[in-house]
Image 1 (cartoon, rainbow, N blue to C red):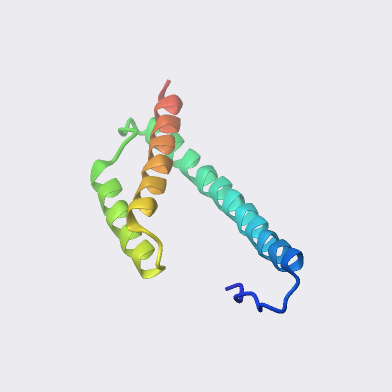
Image 2: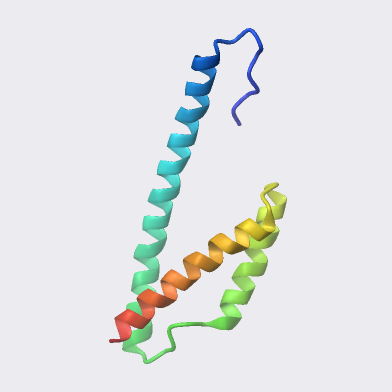
Length: 101
């Protein structure tokens, strides 16, 4: 966690430090999403080979509930967490549907 700025700190230096941390976190998010999609791409190929449906509503519901809980525990708005995971799930399903064609 980035410490709160000291009033005696240089404003530009403090802001640059915060922004540098944000940039690092953004890069980590992108790399984690890339890894996640590599794996879900394999799932889509597996589902296609075995004629399984692209979507699994029961698993999706469990994932959403689990991630809402994690968001709440992490002091992140669960609604925001759900919106993010729903977007990711919709992209995964789109990729799975594409793998079937």
